[in-house]
Length: 203
Image 1 (cartoon, rainbow, N blue to C red):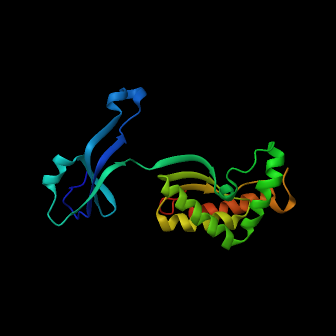
Image 2: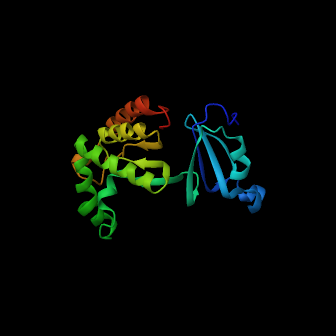
Image 3: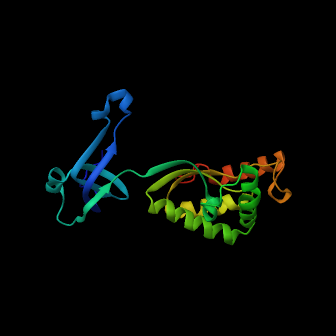
């Protein structure tokens, strides 16, 4: 742990809950920490200390801003392990059988992601909604369009989020304008990997 007095920026005071280990390995009581009156000390964009407010407050320099978050709970960001950003605009679409649902809702919506401006607008809204709901890491599906994933990564990079994403690969059972070949799918995916994998927090 860094010295909490080295280049401190802000301290956040609230209830704090975070996991320490798998309960199966260490038992429930030793798997987490909960501080009813907790403090999270952040310096240079990194957490440098967490604990009871009464223990951390005496360590703080008078210049450090303490942000009081009464009635709030601070937790680590949530992780979504399977989500499709192109389906943001069709959430709650009528529950047809799968093929009907794809043909009536999914494929028409995914065609729109050929337009980079449209893809960017949806990516911005999608990432804003993830953050608003506490999700900071996700495994995200794009569309068959390479540019839809490129645009998505551009927006995720601006927010310094951990996103694992890629283009959809379809060479059958879909409209011709939403399919690619094994060769084009490989080439597009390879280009995206070379450009974005391990760039910042992206994969």
